[in-house]
Length: 242
Ligand code: F6R
Image (cartoon, rainbow, N blue to C red; front, side, top):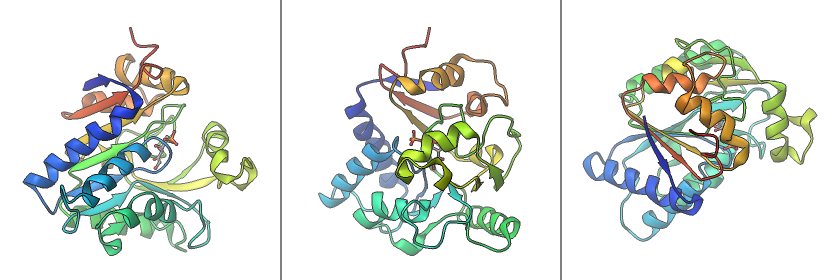
């Protein structure tokens, strides 16, 4: 695990650099996209580079990591809508080349199985962008998640629902209780994992991620066993590292 401590405003550019290098050697690369605040600067930096003609995502494809269950199609907080607005609509990645687990399906287990199959058919994820929750979750693999888990329905912790209420006008009751999420086993198959964490609120999770014992209580710690992980943190998120 490589840990890079840098200014928050540098992180987007550094990850965009990684993506540019990937696309240069593999124009049809498969990206793994996270939602939330952490990847926004990456998406800004990639959008700027695509707009300037530095590289193109026209032949790439992408998988979003997770989705709330039960939000109506097109809900502004649905991760499919969010990723379209934050990223896909700003680059030349074709909308139909982006897939996510279908949280609106009447057969959630079937939706998870089809999503796993789609990742397999695409040849796996080349570069997976991740954030980390204050409780140590990656994607929505909350504490206690199995390290072997695949995409499946999960229940969000009260902490995650509190953290995400900011996207729902501060109303925790509006945050869905369930989600579909890539499993830890699924994430571990990505060829390169890039995790971004900024701000003091992530310091405890980052400490466990980087220096803690590998434990299902802090799901991100499984990444210590991945052969190619790059963690980008700012000073505040790194403040509890030894
Ligand atoms: C989002 C996701 C989550 C977030 C995490 C951090 O697709 O899978 O694991 O990455 O909750 O969220 P932010 O970046 O908003 O602090």
